[in-house]
Length: 107
Figure 1 (cartoon, rainbow, N blue to C red):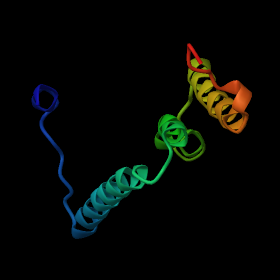
Figure 2: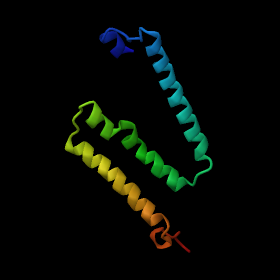
Figure 3: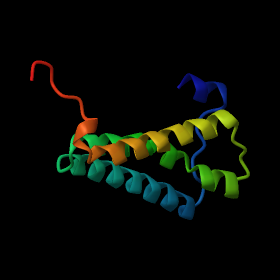
């Protein structure tokens, strides 16, 4: 709220088509989030964690931002995205390998 006060307050859509877009975007986000959390009940914990780790990469939409909006990303941003993708790949490859899992102590 302080930031809004400093920069002149919120800017609301001025046309019906803009309000429609805003409402549809909000509803799409709402339904996507609700269904994502409902689906978690039916998934195993490890694959679910992997999908949630991909969320920052997908939500930023690196390719779309760089290609269509002309934004420039720095090397550390590309490196971070690559590390997430590599981590998900390695965890997925090792998920089916029983020797890659830790055994409980005392067993």
